[in-house]
Length: 492
Ligand code: ADP
Image (tube, rainbow, N blue to C red; front, side, top):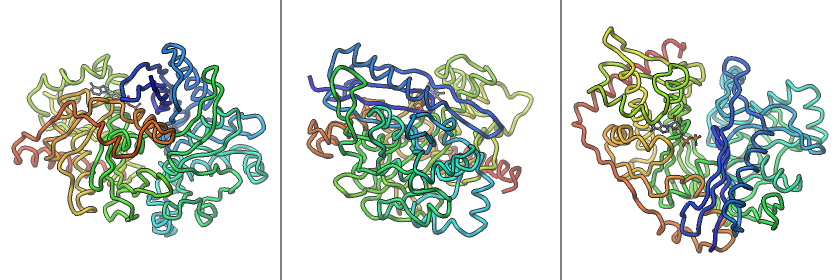
């Protein structure tokens, strides 16, 4: 049997999945990854945990299945920054996670200094602490001796993909792929190269940076996963891998992934185009030297709001219980939940915003609050879809969705209602991991081309819009008032 090993290193867990050539899951291993919050707004992880857990999961999957995969693909949480010593392989600081807001003031200063248009023209991104550049600069400025060592070429910077590749190849290969590089805010996505003007703006020495390859490439070889040498032939940031796994290869197609956050990407073809509506432009994928771009709407908190209700308010013990609780009441009773725990992402981009539950009365209870948290997923999606529609002049007939939250039928139906488009959930729900396996399989000859992959996509569940327009308009009015309130409190 031909198999492919996918390494999926996410924010909440490190996973390995062995896929058959037909996309069936043959074995999965995963380990939860702790997040650390050393100060208000700071979010860190231990890079050695990331490495060790990932290696453990990959080895376990291969041992359990007894299979030797044709190739290995890597997909990962994006933007998270790791800096390590090239000689010892030891990180000089914890991984600063994409959700971390410690560089909000620096971003504000750069924005006030008028730098955002030049940054956007080169990267397709906005000046927000979400991206790697200011986090990397923070490490160089705050870890003793780091800047001098970086300038001497003694240190390496990488997003999680590079860190894993470096470790899997025993320190031989320091490389990344276009989609991960594109999220650093140091990479010119039109020229597909690191950008000297951005390196100087963020004060980052070039000597730190990895080589950048297409998503399909022979990234390196590893002997660490089993007693054979395996080739790593596919790599992409998680949302880009999900575009591949969801086979959104035609211009206009949209996928939305609902995990910790929610990320919607619309394929816009081979021409870079800046968003006029506060979305990002990002390479969807780069194959055979050609970049296909996407408009991206990034929402920082989606499923994480449900986790917060579970862990901090203890309204239920399992995220899946949220559905029964939310549907135990007939409506939200005027309660809205803006889950801006780490600021607001697209299309608002306000790192200072904080979460709020609004519209509480004496009758409000746990069910209304839970319902409001689930409903927020639909409203946030609508905000993104409105921006995409305005940028692209239209929206695809249906949206392909995936991620942990799509297990929740109430959320899926409400998203379809609020965006007024059918939502389609594929049979293989692990689209991110599947995308990495597909990339590895494309490079190693298991798959012919993108048409071959597109022909494999199958719809499992379809949710069609059913809510009367007046009702969805009333719900949206309530959401917009709540967003307005959150923005005013944060001074925006
Ligand atoms: P990630 O890849 O970002 O780690 P996943 O795609 O695994 O995330 O999704 C996990 C998220 O989905 C968690 O935040 C969890 O709270 C949420 N979740 C999982 N199942 C449900 C459910 N049935 N209803 C609501 N939320 C859910």
